[in-house]
Length: 302
Ligand SMILES: Nc1nc2c(ncn2[C@@H]2O[C@H](COP(=O)(O)OP(=O)(O)OP(=O)(O)O)[C@@H](O)[C@H]2O)c(=O)[nH]1
Image 1 (cartoon, rainbow, N blue to C red):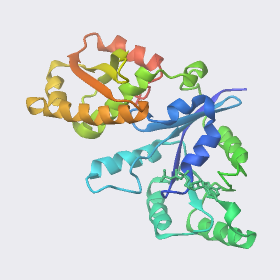
Image 2 (cartoon, protein in one colour):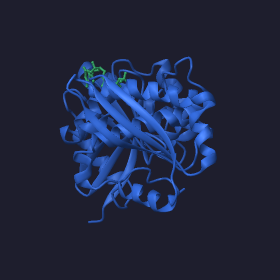
Image 3 (cartoon, rainbow, N blue to C red):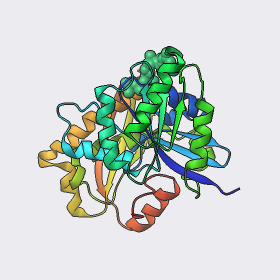
């Protein structure tokens, strides 16, 4: 049987049950990546293997809960995750029905959902009676042409296997993005590097140098319970250094603070983060090495 692999964006209002569903579909084996390993376009929430299929769940951060300081570029980037996905699954809550939030999502879906496979997952079916569910299914399908509708309870596990199986069949044929053995223990160093890269992406967006990667060079768990992490931000050209550093080093300082806070929350221990910006020669070879590692595989291919 040929292998399949694809990106799935799980979208829905806060509290719809996305995390609960993800945890069920992904399982403990890859829970380490359910935190935030990101690709160039979207953050990976988790990877599920089903038969010969690799299902990569991507996050759509801040999509429906824009914070005040979230600018247009970030919202666009968030939608980028859904727009780039092979399959979009909209999750709604059975007992809440078509809320204004769901209506807003449907409006956006009408724009980005064209020509894309979009499924509906009605969650928390344990909270409603059958007639309510049927009415809601009809109503939603009149508003948008979903490829398929699933009635599930992420918490109790009803219908989850069916959805997973359908996703496995629906993602496109092609090689896996991540070797199976790598998924299980994506090293912490790499995750920490990706967290820093994410901060750079969010901060610099359009200005972000094309050939930019972050590597964790040193990692020391100290006796006092804290961790010292040294990372290098590599850029392809000397001229890009200034962009990353910012005026009087302010940009890199802010990025360091944000990344440190996130890594620290992830590790659940104090972190001292040291960032260095370096220019890397022979970029091409390095980029290939990275794509072998399964990171930034979209770089240069689009
Ligand atoms: N009754 C019931 N509750 C559920 C079900 N699935 C999830 N929940 C509950 O719904 C709440 C929200 O679930 P989450 O998985 O955190 O929702 P989310 O969409 O990830 O929320 P955000 O992280 O805020 O976007 C939790 O209290 C879950 O226990 C379900 O099938 N039935």
